[in-house]
Length: 349
Image (cartoon, rainbow, N blue to C red):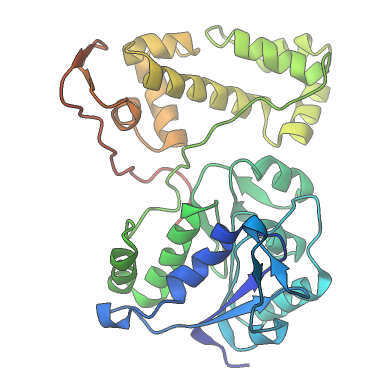
């Protein structure tokens, strides 16, 4: 079947968030040809029987059914309602058929669960909102989930994190298929950055999971959070959980979705982020308080995970009116804490 790359089918599900669902329609569904953007044909598709209800109880009636995926060069699953619920089989079959026939398939935020349920992410790297990443990884072990990047481009399948990262992924599609000028034309009209690298880190929080009192893993995680300034090994945490290292590692990965050392590193970086926002301590002092020997040890990991240097992060999130004098002490005056463009971090784009 001949597929038109400028025809975009958007799968819409009942009880899916309105913002995420509207992202590809906002990017592709507005005529911006007068500004130099390509002309698109957007097909909002009812992926299940309607009317469909979205955020705030608003009902929508998409004008197309699943047959509208035929001929679409781009098929987007912008969201999904519940990570514990399997998407309807007719939608999964239509999605697989479109992909097998050559369509570029995009899953945004929880839309990655739709692609994963269809088997399109098996053996691939995938992105989703960091909050849902552990569940996606645990539910689909054949998928390599990266909880930190804005989007992953794996050729014929693209996945992204939530909300604004969906815009980034759509603009990346335009840039890849129509060039930077076309993407910039759309971005300028939408008043968003024309290019943020897929590998650029999400500014993310990694909260400790809520577990029952006395849970072995919770005990080990609480111990780690209370001793971040100390050298911590997996054997130490396993001992706190009263488990062998091998059993502890296996159970930790199954529940949290990443290894104990990865989780520990993220907790240290998270604490460093908070201290950069809330204190005037020098970076070296913060590094020691979160378990690094010095700032020179903290900086590479911080940049890799967050996407910017500790000082740039502090400048971005420092409250207005507070000026860093360069030695960790603050003064009053005109703020230098304007947001900065974050450089590319890890991942692929």
